[in-house]
Length: 100
Image (cartoon, rainbow, N blue to C red; front, side, top):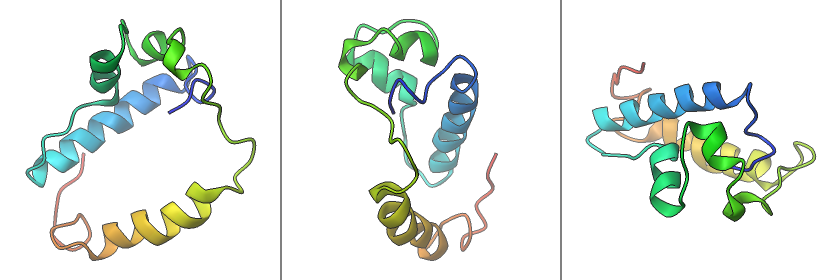
């Protein structure tokens, strides 16, 4: 996460998708902490996601990519995230896992 991508308008969507992640992995038996909980555990952060990350000095130097031509899009998503979702036993696609 970087401060460039967490704005007042995107933060609520990020919080909802993060709750979905925590609920989904809980159905697989994994106890995950929310991004906000992890942020508050590591830094003296307060409030909701936007208010917790924007003034945080630990995130001030992390910048968003200036375009979509970077490693995450071309390697991580295509070669790791998508195949794991598709072929992992017990995954949402192969195990009938209900998602929020």
